[in-house]
Length: 405
Image (cartoon, rainbow, N blue to C red; front, side, top):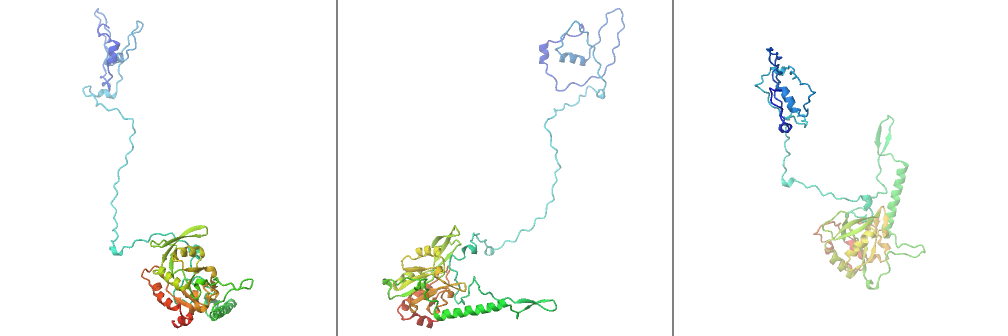
């Protein structure tokens, strides 16, 4: 084509950077009308801008002598042609490929009414909750320590065991169909209970009158007292029988910070700690009594607990004999310490115990003391020293202790 400039070289076309957006199409042009021939050479139609761009963007098509000239294609008229060329559309940024999450409308909750705070208590009214402590069940610990601990003045009835519970009023149906309580109806079993109670009372009276059951007789017919013959160093001394729990010490399976001893005890194949605190004045009391008496500790506790406690308590080595639960006389569920079975003259025997049920057979041989748990100002053991010193030289302790009641 003689009227147009030659095509640019391929290397120049490579440097042409493509536009971000093609220019808007030109308005459609009317079909070219061939000029009248006046004997001159016919000129080819003028190429449109779109045709020129097509040739520039496709340089790979090499010119060929066999190729016929490409006629420019008239652009398809569209609605965009009505837009004037002088007002190009705004350039749009490329769309992002990241999906935009749907944004839910923000709902502002209505403020709720705040409840009024609880009233602040004064400091003196605040109480800290107790520290949880893992305690053993009574079924596990029952029978380890003394089971005869009762307050002074007790009638001797067992707290845990009631061989003859109180009778319950029976309910007898009446003729009119209504059930009402009757306090005059007794069954044959209740009559038998009355007989058993009377027999037990007679047995208790007999034991008290006789001063206990007496020295046990062995299978060979030989008496078997609880204590061996008195040692030469104690000949001429009276026998002082001491209780352990709540008389000399207090023990607990609950942790005690000021405990004097911690004794491990095996209960049903498990080991548990027993915390022991000493009664004030017990060390000096044992030392003084060991100088003038034959001292015997007689406890209703088991030996697996009482033995290690006495090992720590008897620092002056004054306790000559130790008796445990198996040596007690079981009377109405109580562990009675029958002094008549010791093998010592009953007029020379004294028992100190906090439980009246323990010496029910020998009340005239007893020196009652109060149950001690943790009072640091207790002085009973110290106060007993001068009295027991004088009692050690009397002929029969029963005359003094019976008159002191």
